Length: 367
Image (cartoon, rainbow, N blue to C red):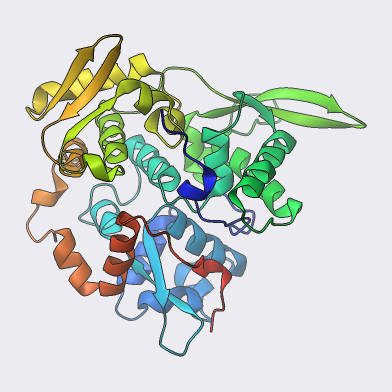
């Protein structure tokens, strides 16, 4: 079992969200603006960005950050002598968020699960989130517990330690993102609550009461262990194959143990809060449709076997859930897309080769 360390999975980036959890419609706003010839890649740099995006000024930075964190955008130098960075949409953004894409308004909960997986999978630009899902010793935690765990992980990663309040803001934002708020009557969050942050619909986190810590009360949160009824088998299979593809030795075919998929830090089991039997069940539902997939049974170990590149199979499986978007007339393949956005293509190729973005551009100058 590999032991993935934070420095190998994430980029040091803290409190870039302006305290805002991702809101309904933000990613579509970003993609639409970037594709508009009259706005384009400098939308987040413009003085009138709040007007163009229809949000408050501080929300512009939040939209920029979350688009980047979900890997809907990449950023690249604006010009040779400029310290500012322009943005470009990834091919995945075209596939998901275009008006002719898979789910531009994120009406299918599967899309939220997919974005959640993209956000956590390497390189992750939300290290506090990565630690919460992959490194916490218990499914129950307080925001102070999470903050302290992140601080320890940052120290072992030899990153420059951010101020504690930045990590604490991340911990607070994480709970806002996934845990439903309660109404004054004590009932679960309303429809408006989900509009505020659609990722609460995933049901990954819940409020578990309070506990005394010195002279104050701390909120206790708990990752849920209920059945993931809103998580389609095809998205689970996609995540498993996408994770296998991150190992260069497996990119032309091979096998990966179910135990690794379920338990390895950075794997789908931890990210989606799934146990091995649930992963196996999902794969058994998908495999009959794909001759290049099978489950092998060894001595005390089951493995997912794939006879061609797992990345290719992963996209076939995922695209099938959305009615085969890539087969629609005029839909660009990745090579075609990145001819239009060569800077984005260069960044994505670097990531695939294991080179994490050298800056977190969102921290840099804007002019």
